[in-house]
Length: 248
Ligand SMILES: [Zn+2]
Image (tube, rainbow, N blue to C red; front, side, top):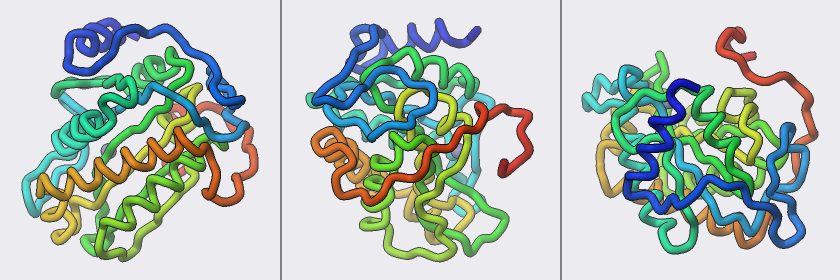
């Protein structure tokens, strides 16, 4: 929690359209209240999008040996592009607006202050294998499946090649399991793959990535889960902790 106050202040003084942190409830018959488990339909009618640019400050995330790009910088750039595309239709809240370190639990705490909101966490990936490439979208909660499906479909429509792509994945991560609102973590592409790293280095490509995420958010807000296939079963597993073994 020690990082929370600076986060709130940086958000309030930044260019985001944040006006308050009061919770909002319900729209169109789908509850948007805070919910511990998320065993419910995906939201529609939400008005607030929390945008989490992964990593930051002393946590660089992945660093591409092909382009020299840092994940933390690409993620923030894409986050700002996404906010631009949502402006006028949604209230957007940034977890970070500059190159600052924010603990994962503090990101979760900030998101869970917001009723009537969704969270998207933006990342670029890395693998020991230089062959692996392609976008991946992670979710855990039942109420996040529809949005994750829409985002992954959108990404696959603009990313030309797929090899070893894990696609849509249900995984218990701190930013997919722990927030009390619908939440999705996006990995836009592998900085460890030469071709994809060069693609991700191009501002126009990052703009297209932001566009398809914005479209997925708008469609989810309009239609809820319609057209996203069967919902996954509810899973009751504990909060994700930093001490959990990898892959658990
Ligand atoms: Zn990351």
